[in-house]
Amino acid sequence: MNSKRLSFTTETVTLIVILVAAVLSLIFLNALIATPKALFGQSLSAITPKLFPSIVLVILTLLIVGTLVFFKSEESDEIVEKMTKTQWGRACVFFGIMTFYALTMVPFGFLISTAIATTLISLQMGSRSFIQIPAVALLGPVLLYLAATRLLAVSLPELNTIELFYAHLLN
Image (cartoon, rainbow, N blue to C red; front, side, top):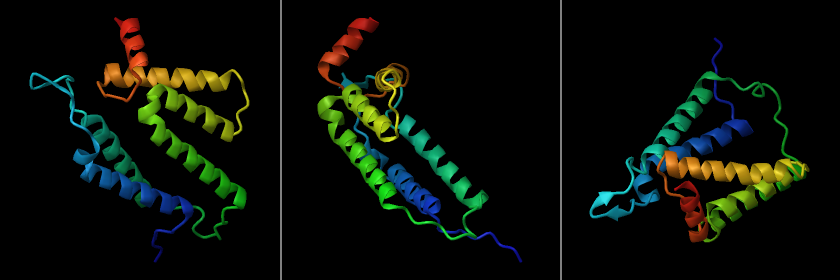
């Protein structure tokens, strides 16, 4: 009898941790997302701010469950190699960059903190192109900010000067 059992490789453990985080985020979504600003008792946006994160978290949960159920790891029969000190160092640096990004989102605003984090991650991953790094670090956050705030009506933290610049540019 050939049964597919769940093997605890690094990828499987990572998927389980992300699955637990996604499910907990869905459960506590009301505490994680602030209520929208109200003008005379009415919401300023057409969609609720919980809609987009809910959709993303449900899709993420379904993809992870599907991956855990339907795909067998090829490494399950082999000895899984342990991470080297260099790989642990890179993982810790990446974690540090993401922590810096989370801590600077409100004081620096979305655009500046995302540009800094994107630049640092590009450099950590080995990119040395002086054209590609600024293009990705500037175009990506600007397009993402405009899509999130204008198309999805999601509020992102931003400095007042940058918000006024966007408002003046788009109106």
